[in-house]
Amino acid sequence: MIVARMRAPAGKMGDPHSHPNEQWIYVLEGEFEFRIDGQTHRVAPGGLIFVPAGRIHQGGATAAGDAVFFTCKDASHGLHGVRADAGRAARTAAPTRKRARRAAPMRRRSAGRRSAGRRAARRA
Image 1 (cartoon, rainbow, N blue to C red):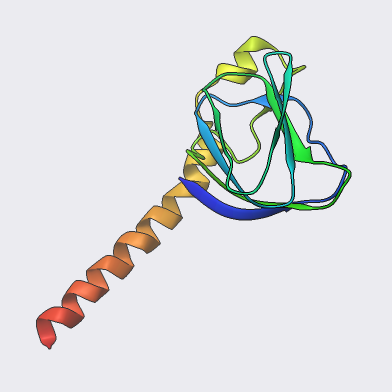
Image 2: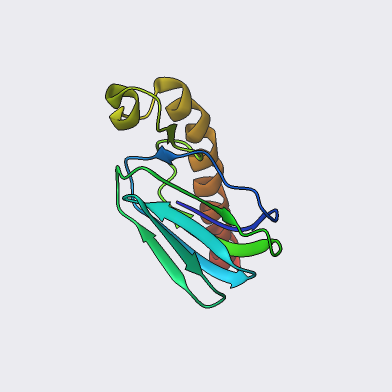
């Protein structure tokens, strides 16, 4: 999972893309413009956006100013998703071996920290 606090610069809209996982976006500051299914929505602070898996969408800050938001999604298929102009096979592809290899050391490091904490607790 990735949970991140992000800033979108004023007037900057991301490219249309999709990912094989759902995504949540919670707007903290500014106004976030979001496009999905041929409709454009403007979301103010405190607003929540849900992006279903596999749906082509795009979003960014309005020209009025930067937008700050939290986003949460399963990142096993990558952080940025697949551009809308890519083929269907690319949009629904499983994680690559390269991505899986990159993620493995992080899982091992994370497991090691948990084990070290347990050992310290037992010694105390």
